[in-house]
Length: 297
Image 1 (cartoon, rainbow, N blue to C red):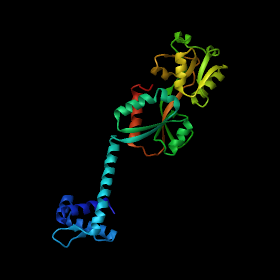
Image 2: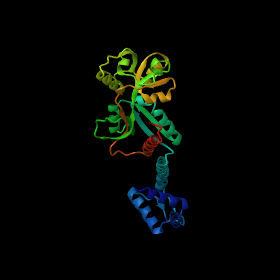
Image 3: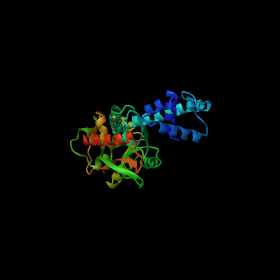
Image 4: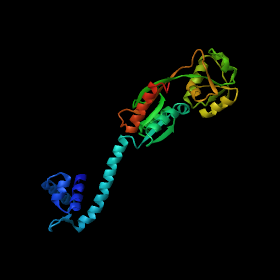
């Protein structure tokens, strides 16, 4: 059974005449009659009484038509929804991101996306890289923003920009007055507030300090970047974070290290060969445009 059969049946019932219904549908009368017969044969009942001067629905036809009208409304609503999603007046985007990006990257992206497409609902999840890979593979999220060192062959990784790590201090910290880069040994006796070991950033920091032969004086560990930022902003401690974080906080300063900490490539992740909704494609395009105009770098 095709939706065309339902449209044809309802047109005949509305016009109470095959000729006028055929004209309204822009089909020939024989074609219309044949389609209605096919529907009746498939259902095994007579839907229309053709014996009088006007055509009317039989009792079985009346019972069927109530459901047919409902089905046609739902089908047409579905068609509208498809068009709405296509022109981005509605829809949903499921985005996963590693925790460090929520402090400086996700906010500007979402603000710009929401301003451009206010009808798109956003579901944002924070998770580590390996969990993002699994979520993409299981179609639990549409896109991920994470570091480019993916392990799964199922994940397509599109590089966005290079993230730089640096020492971050409050404006009243002695380091804030230095114009030149500091050496790793300058950190040895400096009280540090660092992210906990479950953050990828912390593993980079530990590996760097170990390579430089530094035994850091870690006074505070926290599992949120906001906590680290507030501790450093209000106190005399230093931390090591993406230097882009200071763009959002005038009370913080970046201090370069020499030799520099290793850089990391930030990437947009998606499952290879997966269907990409209009919302996901629009978000990816927005990320590219913000890279081009320098908003993200």
